[in-house]
Length: 471
Image 1 (cartoon, helix red, strand yellow):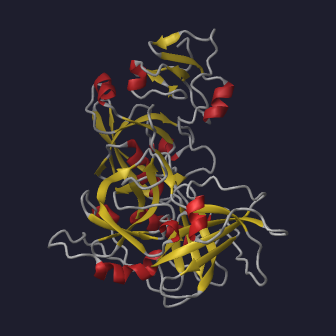
Image 2 (cartoon, one colour):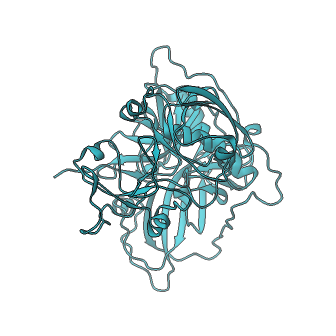
């Protein structure tokens, strides 16, 4: 039997039966900046130190770093009304129940059923702005923040949240709070020392050490926009929203998820890099919403096999389809173009290119260099705003087994296709695309090994456009 490791977000939740006590305060949650406050860019309120981490000198322990940094890492407790007081499915529920001295999850007479959750957060500004994970506070009707050096508990309001990156910004009514210095995560290297600070299983101010195991992790199916720092620093449920710091005590990431067969730590954890965090948090504080850049293209990685078939080098990102009435179309991008540079930086990975474009503000300029008919062509694009609907990704097809037994014959060995009928267009959000849809891929076929999946849409064969099976 083969075990499958799956990503786990790190919020530790527990369904408890608890009534609201007299005088309990309820925080009001909105998605816009707080009234009565002047929204300032985050860059004007945080400390920045863009130098590389310290990579020289003997290891002397981390006590000084922890003493300086830990006060800015807080505990977050959430409470959510639920329809029933059913037992929690959280594998750590019993352990947490014992930890807090709660005998069971039965509902006392007249009590209001609630789900209690725990997580971590990081203070970014001295006047009370905190960052955490969206999944820590998602759906909560009450959020409490506890500072490590302050016995007082603060009610927190949600300034804004972005589920697509799993980030949220909270505000507490406090001043002169301890803050943390923010690094430049782009200078991190695999092997750099890092510390994870948070509140696993409610154990506040827990510190673990490790290294950066990998950079730029994506395709983890955790959130829509992924560029994770991978680390072997031990992180567990309750660490969500906590700090990942370097050996200068600077914030390099926000701990978010682990890869595990059991839900416990096995040395594979993921943190959102701080450069992405600052971009998202800045927009949430200043505007209350996220505006992502939009080109209007469907991209694909240029694999060695595909590059050989097209007679080009395997460096670049393939433009599969340019959608009508989009910034890419207006700028002159064409189907089959190969993007080799973006803002004068090499384009080698579809996910990173997509992430970079999305980070650009609408209305800004993007300089592309594309390979077309063997020649490099510069193209300047004015970035648009990503529509709320229609991410236009060619995945998420509901099933590999939608082709009836009497359906189309195999297109090539191991691959079945069909005309792009209306039901497929609706399922794939492909109203403006012409092509044929892959309905089934044999698991052990060459098509599967090349990365083809049910729900992919074929728009060209041998550089010739196809709009139907007949073509």
